[in-house]
Length: 278
Length: 308
Image 1 (cartoon, rainbow over the protein chains, first blue to last red):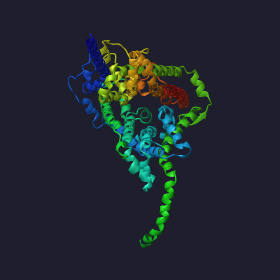
Image 2: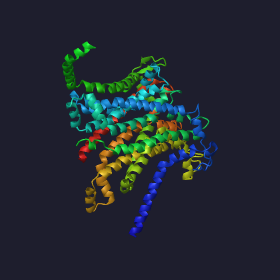
Image 3: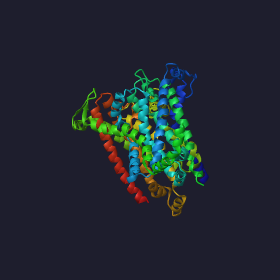
Image 4: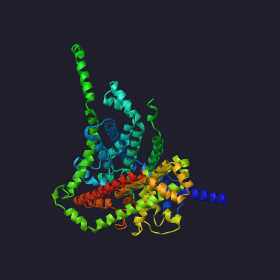
């Protein structure tokens, strides 16, 4: 009896896990299946999971000379540039907050302010930002998005990197300073190499958040600088959504995120400080 | 050339002294911090103050702002659509977080013994929905929930059942899809915490005759309370500003059944160009958010004290 109960429990548990995984994966299955279907196969009931005639027509349209690929390009530029500028600003700031004790607890106040800003809803600042961008003549420009993304992801990046700076044993940095290195040399040659896992984590988060960003792109761009999330939204037309194109674009958008998730898993686990103090 | 060469040795001690002095001054750290602080100040702090300023004004299309005092705020009190949006957001927040908590706990307890084994694969698979764009998720579920040819009706055998098009159902569908995306977040937080509970404590309780339910109620739940509260706070803050998911899943409809405060504010600001009023909405939401967060953090502090 006991063995039977155990078997039943194990089967139930496995079934639960399978059901769960199926639920998690359902939209992905839909995406992959629909992206390779011809339009006349998509709107049928009951739906077929495997496409009857495997087609690349949706991808071909996206990558055609005047296709939707340019919106992905905008996303790529905004993401890449804003991630680089965010890190270029966040690393010195995090180093300064983590390695130096400012008078009158100034550093701690800044850290708390940054933490609060991390939770700032975009709609709280969007109206003045829109006016600023308009008067700078940057409406419908990728550079406006780069600026806004950088400002919005800076607090997060500093909050990821700063604890790692604190985690580096003081002796290492002091040794460098005693040996005659300036604080900047210490930062570049000693601290930053040890920060690689934290910087990588910050980079992944900035990349994914900029890649997925929708609200600012919706407000600050109209056509030329539009990014892919707004593109996917505009596919839902009055004539009925173009599901084939939506699925193909969604798949193109999801692949880098999935790759990053797998990549990040490795980075979070790896600690680099372990071997540096002997 | 010669003069420069000659001048060099006399310069060096002075330069060295300069360098030494500079090294002891803290200013260099200030300069390292300044660029980031400036960017944040210009693109987030200043706009916040400007939003506050605009909330007391009427903003013309020409960009001219006229002082209207508290008009925008009194208008908000009488605006039924605003209260509807507020109600939608509160229901979404409270029910959404509750659903996610219950689901996450159920999963965490169900998978407790397997998590260690499936660790990396399971965690990666679960992390993917959280990292995906809410736009992609909203649109995909919109397709899956389509009454005529959606996969959900096909899988459930409920052909022609209306999900996102039914005003009574749309909000619950939205909560369900949000739970699909964010339950893994709480689940991963809870499992990480559960692994941290020493086995000896649970062993000791078992030996004293405690059943599974008692172990859960008396040991796991109280010990996990601080972790859970942090998770709840993060989810609550995110739920307050939810925009992308309803905007893409239901477009805020049918009617205004899923119009959250963020969508409501966006429409006032960028469809009707009523930006003074929209600013006062933003200020109100932020004020509510800050009050809620402070109350919550106080609660968290007292719970942490009680546990330790």
